[in-house]
Amino acid sequence: MPVRRYLRGSAQLMAALGAILVLTIVAGLWRVWRGPAPADRLLAVQLFGTTGTALLLIMAQWQGQPALRHVALVLALLAAAVSAALVQYLRQSGSGRAVPGERDMPAEQRK
Image 1 (cartoon, rainbow, N blue to C red):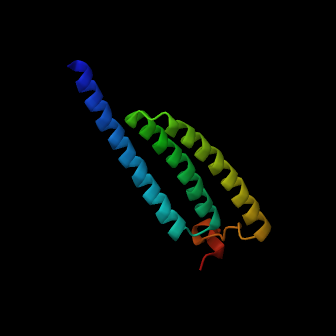
Image 2: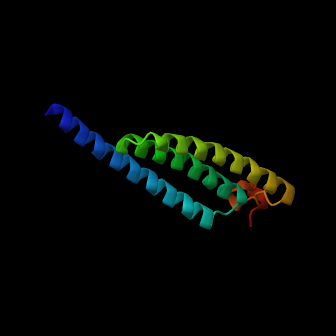
Protein backbone atom coordinates (compact mmCIF):
# COMPACT_ATOMS: atom_id res chain seq x y z
CA MET A 1 0.00 0.00 0.00
CA PRO A 2 2.67 2.61 0.80
CA VAL A 3 4.22 2.09 -2.65
CA ARG A 4 0.91 2.89 -4.37
CA ARG A 5 0.47 5.99 -2.25
CA TYR A 6 3.98 7.11 -3.26
CA LEU A 7 3.22 6.52 -6.93
CA ARG A 8 -0.03 8.46 -6.66
CA GLY A 9 1.80 11.39 -5.06
CA SER A 10 4.51 11.17 -7.70
CA ALA A 11 1.93 11.34 -10.48
CA GLN A 12 0.39 14.42 -8.89
CA LEU A 13 3.81 16.03 -8.64
CA MET A 14 4.54 15.27 -12.29
CA ALA A 15 1.18 16.73 -13.32
CA ALA A 16 1.85 19.88 -11.30
CA LEU A 17 5.32 20.29 -12.79
CA GLY A 18 3.90 19.75 -16.28
CA ALA A 19 1.28 22.42 -15.67
CA ILE A 20 3.93 24.88 -14.50
CA LEU A 21 6.00 24.20 -17.61
CA VAL A 22 2.97 24.73 -19.86
CA LEU A 23 2.38 28.08 -18.14
CA THR A 24 6.00 28.95 -18.83
CA ILE A 25 5.47 28.21 -22.52
CA VAL A 26 2.39 30.46 -22.51
CA ALA A 27 4.45 33.25 -20.93
CA GLY A 28 7.08 32.73 -23.63
CA LEU A 29 4.42 33.00 -26.34
CA TRP A 30 3.36 36.31 -24.84
CA ARG A 31 6.98 37.51 -24.94
CA VAL A 32 7.32 36.49 -28.60
CA TRP A 33 4.12 38.33 -29.43
CA ARG A 34 4.79 41.47 -27.35
CA GLY A 35 8.60 41.46 -27.19
CA PRO A 36 9.94 44.96 -27.68
CA ALA A 37 13.20 43.80 -29.25
CA PRO A 38 14.35 40.88 -31.39
CA ALA A 39 16.61 39.79 -28.54
CA ASP A 40 13.54 39.27 -26.33
CA ARG A 41 11.97 37.12 -29.00
CA LEU A 42 15.18 35.11 -29.36
CA LEU A 43 15.28 34.42 -25.63
CA ALA A 44 11.66 33.29 -25.75
CA VAL A 45 12.49 30.84 -28.55
CA GLN A 46 15.32 29.46 -26.40
CA LEU A 47 12.83 29.16 -23.56
CA PHE A 48 10.60 27.02 -25.79
CA GLY A 49 13.45 24.62 -26.43
CA THR A 50 14.45 24.17 -22.81
CA THR A 51 10.90 24.10 -21.48
CA GLY A 52 9.79 21.68 -24.17
CA THR A 53 12.71 19.41 -23.35
CA ALA A 54 11.88 19.51 -19.64
CA LEU A 55 8.21 18.83 -20.36
CA LEU A 56 9.09 15.82 -22.52
CA LEU A 57 11.39 14.44 -19.83
CA ILE A 58 8.66 14.78 -17.22
CA MET A 59 6.18 13.08 -19.53
CA ALA A 60 8.66 10.26 -20.18
CA GLN A 61 9.00 9.61 -16.46
CA TRP A 62 5.31 10.08 -15.69
CA GLN A 63 4.01 7.82 -18.46
CA GLY A 64 6.88 5.33 -18.42
CA GLN A 65 7.75 6.00 -22.07
CA PRO A 66 11.55 5.97 -22.46
CA ALA A 67 11.22 6.91 -26.15
CA LEU A 68 10.18 10.41 -25.07
CA ARG A 69 13.68 10.87 -23.62
CA HIS A 70 15.10 10.44 -27.12
CA VAL A 71 12.59 12.94 -28.47
CA ALA A 72 13.63 15.38 -25.73
CA LEU A 73 17.29 14.98 -26.70
CA VAL A 74 16.49 15.68 -30.36
CA LEU A 75 14.41 18.73 -29.36
CA ALA A 76 17.29 20.07 -27.25
CA LEU A 77 19.71 19.71 -30.15
CA LEU A 78 17.29 21.33 -32.59
CA ALA A 79 16.63 24.20 -30.18
CA ALA A 80 20.35 24.92 -29.95
CA ALA A 81 20.69 24.88 -33.74
CA VAL A 82 17.67 27.15 -34.20
CA SER A 83 19.03 29.62 -31.64
CA ALA A 84 22.37 29.76 -33.43
CA ALA A 85 20.63 30.25 -36.78
CA LEU A 86 18.46 33.05 -35.40
CA VAL A 87 21.49 34.83 -33.96
CA GLN A 88 23.20 34.66 -37.37
CA TYR A 89 20.05 35.94 -39.09
CA LEU A 90 19.68 38.84 -36.67
CA ARG A 91 23.37 39.68 -37.00
CA GLN A 92 23.22 39.73 -40.81
CA SER A 93 19.95 41.65 -41.03
CA GLY A 94 21.12 44.26 -38.53
CA SER A 95 17.80 44.12 -36.70
CA GLY A 96 19.37 42.66 -33.58
CA ARG A 97 20.25 46.07 -32.21
CA ALA A 98 18.06 47.04 -29.34
CA VAL A 99 16.76 50.58 -29.26
CA PRO A 100 17.62 52.14 -25.91
CA GLY A 101 14.61 53.04 -23.85
CA GLU A 102 14.16 56.11 -21.72
CA ARG A 103 15.40 54.37 -18.60
CA ASP A 104 18.66 53.45 -20.40
CA MET A 105 19.42 57.04 -21.32
CA PRO A 106 21.40 59.42 -19.11
CA ALA A 107 19.25 61.84 -17.13
CA GLU A 108 20.33 64.89 -19.16
CA GLN A 109 19.10 63.31 -22.43
CA ARG A 110 15.62 62.46 -21.15
CA LYS A 111 12.77 64.73 -22.19
